[in-house]
Image (tube, rainbow, N blue to C red):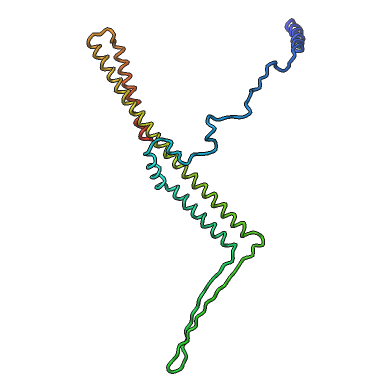
Length: 239
């Protein structure tokens, strides 16, 4: 009975406290300010790529490498064949809108029953012209479609060529980076080995500054450098 009475007393107090709270908008504006426009670091190269951008890389060997890639890449060769096919399609589509001429020749030879026999030869030449009247614009649309296919094929070829050159350059510089990291790993390993030899020599000579712990740390550094060297060799092979 006492417990129920306590609940009845507390409930109105809680309801009154809730009614006294006023829920309103926060005083601070929590909206994130955003700029009206975005600017890039370099405005001079927006929307364009330099035609001779390979020269800006500063590596003469990359020209020979990209030439080899362009010469031997099968995907690019297939794209070039599709481009030639599209060019031929525009010729066919344009020719269908003009009159067509056909020239044919014939000859025949006969022999009579005279004595001696005589031979008669007949030759004929026929010139025919035909033209399809484009009442519903079918030929016009076919011609337009062939020209649009040519534009698409040209864009696909240019994109494939640019992508191949860019990926070749990227792979070449990845190889250079991997080689430099490998050289750095070898120098780091050699440095740790030289340092370890000094520490071990001082420890054997009884130097107080060379402790067994320092010798162990030096050996651990050599082992870590050896692992890093193996990883860099694998990265170079992959590049």
